Image (cartoon, rainbow, N blue to C red):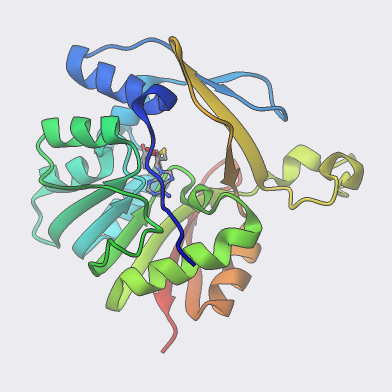
Length: 251
Ligand code: SAH
């Protein structure tokens, strides 16, 4: 099958536009997040440029665990690579970032990251191998839907060197659909897995397409990961159902 793996057109890339503006001017407007399931929300653009000290504990732990050649997948402004680059502790080797947003990729290069690939993580044309792959700020989101989680996991397996690790965070959204007895409201879910969300972003006059974004609970992630040949351990949990998982190839 001849599949195309898309990158984002700048006129359809609100997050990239916000990142570009913040990188160039040191300030930016509102990055709005819309979803049919939730009230309108906002991502503070400066949060996308967080330093190590400003990161949540889950992300700090992921950076602490990183070693060897690192790929930051869906890197955004590049904040995790930049934090690793600033540490200079010798644990990490080459740092590489990949993102589908040309605007974000330019912003990463402008901040001094050297190995920045503007392509889709799923594109087999990108064929390097890494000791550590980071997928942070709900990294399972890159799968979009639960049915596409195996494709993402198999792709990550291809990109790993022997002995390598994937560090990915996500969040258990079950609490959003529970009734008083702790049962899931199946009617509200219409048969879908409760971590499947669809979002649209807007920045000034730039309006993105709706896109699918997958949150997983830890047990679901572990089951899928095991089916794709990984061991999967929970490294830490946050205060609000979020967790960091570490995936390594089964012996
Ligand atoms: N990891 C960053 C950004 C998270 S937002 C942080 O923690 O701040 C998710 C990012 O993933 C966006 O920059 C988006 O452009 C990128 N992205 C989404 N799907 C992708 C894909 N299939 N391949 C590469 N990048 C992707």
